[in-house]
Image (cartoon, rainbow, N blue to C red; front, side):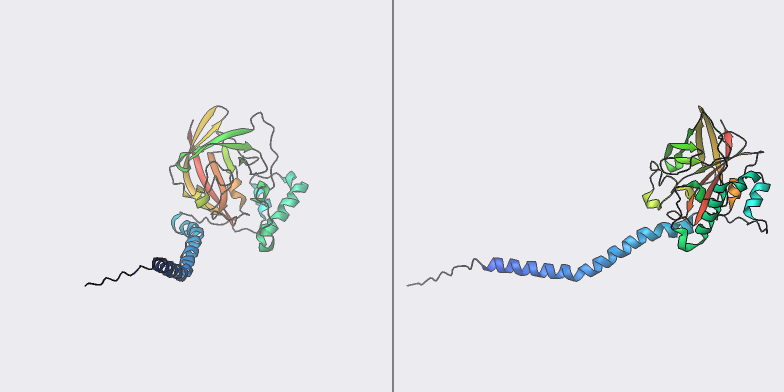
Length: 270
């Protein structure tokens, strides 16, 4: 006579195995978490640092010879006809000159308001803007995907538009048309945001086209050069009335305000 013995399976055993597996998985995740955090931290550091590194390695910055002279920059500007002698007595000029000292002093550099164009080149007092029916015009740069950006003539604050520097030539005129615009780290570049619109300005190449639409006329400029200057070097604002040029200026390296990056272009035609 055969005997059969039936053993009832323990219903709780699978749950114990499952719980053991979950514990093992959790322990593994805890062990790799520090490594993951380190990798993530290094990634974010590279995201922030790479634009600065690539800027130094890839952007073709051209050093220009500085003018060695015991004559103050203010006097040089007056002699070249950019700043009139009367403006030296203007009370606002002394405020601008004091702003220059702040730019040079690291302790106060962070307090300089770069929303005001007078602080971009502190040693150059703002010329008076002549009244005109035309207060705005447009700028387009296909290579930077900038389309019909608004340029305010004689504006003081760079917040919601680009700024045409007071006293410089209007588009199409003989002289140097100077336009200021903000920049940030290239990864945050936005051609529609005026606080970041010129972030990729240093990447423009010789031969690229810039279009200005002024008073119903389209002016085409061609990029010739890119260079950098210190905030006290105001020669980039000079007016030479035997040529028709355009200067686009922003703070560099992108995301900082240590220097001024200048794209120089020349009028090709209408």
